[in-house]
Amino acid sequence: MSKHINLTLKVWRQKNQKEKGHFETIAAPQISTEMSFLEMLDVVNEKMTTEGKEPIAFDHDCREGICGMCGAVVNGRPHGALKGTTLCQLHMRHFNDGDTIAIEPFRAMAFKVIKDLAVDRSAFDQIIQAGGFISVNAGGAQDANNLPVPQERAELAMDAAQCIGCGACVAACPNASAMLFVSAKVSQFALLPQGRPEAARRALAMVRAMDRLGFGNCGNETECEAECPKGISISNIARLNREFFKASFGSSIK
Amino acid sequence: MNWLAATFASSIGKKLLMAITGFFFCFFLAVHLAGNLTLYGGSDSFNSYAAHLHSLGKLLVVAEWGMVLFALIHIITGLTLFYQNFQARPQRYQINKSAGGRTLGSATMPYTGVLVLAFVIFHLLNFHFVDKSQTTIYDIVSAAFASPLYVILYVIAMVVVAVHVSHGFWSAFQTVGANHPKYMPTIRTLSILFALLVGLGFGLLPIFISISA
Image (cartoon, rainbow over all chains, first blue to last red; front, top):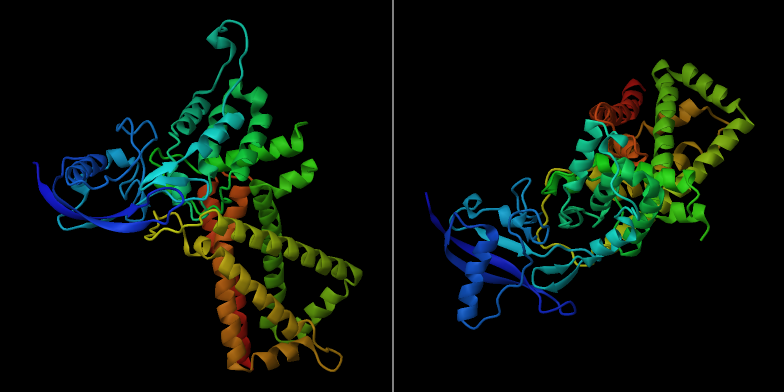
């Protein structure tokens, strides 16, 4: 059954990276509970545009929960309080009539606010560029049975590969650490035979990139795991630590 | 930078330093508690324990200086991490809510750490750096805990230590990479049990001494 609710938004408004931001109170009347959170923002923006006001800038792309583009901190929780969903998959039926909703951007030294809720997460791209790939330079694909992979390992690698790189882990981490993201990206390769040849180089390069970009240090607070829309486990962080130690102390790579 | 220095200067390297020294301090707490349990046996048993400990001679001196070194590593690395983590989010959230990951222990690590340091200094001044030529260690301890203020201070300090250890113990396992689907739930439970053991084990001693005196 479709229902309409009236909301008050407290939205973080920030003109650009340099200027100081502030909360702006915006009324959002007659919001259908069938809408997604982003559609609600669309409706609010449409109204603001026709009134000649500056619409709220926010990140979005696929709106299916798989691209990792959207995200904001809703009432203190990245992607909102609903577990295992991105912001685009959070629906307004989870809110009540008369609610006040505070919306802030993901905040971290390494994630600069571009405008309002839109955040520059290219630091993640730089981490991927440092080592989040495998190099297979020549030859046709070999027979699949040449590389037996236990089902359990394949599943673990797939679990790690679920990471969409949205940055909610960084946003949720009290230390703004990117360890869950990096651990997922290292794990998806480290668990499979194709990823092993470059495992040491990858672990070192990605951790160094992460440190250089100004992310914080992991304190095992486990907030990232609790907020991750894809349910990436912190056991990946333990695996990243193991890979990093193996690479540091056991490989010839400096 | 030299590869070894680069390893320990990295975020995971610093975590490793915290974990190794942290493990050591957990071991120290267990040994210290085992020794202190002789206080329940009264004056003779505690004094004889102290005499046995000091009969280790040079070995004890080495252990003490080793502990000072580990403490320095733990404190300096911890403060560096605290500063860097603070820097990593220059603009704080206006509204901050936990998703349920944080615990009292994990959320207060730097603060309980500093309090434990203050307590350790206070504790050493009380019982270590004192003239023991005219008296026994048991008399010094029982004289100290004759004061309710000392009892309260020590009990509070033990609660703080327990809170610190409740996160530190399992966290050290996670950091060294010892996360296993079969053992991790047990390690997390052990962390709480160890914190309770430390808190109750040490915390009840001042109360016992003040009552029995």
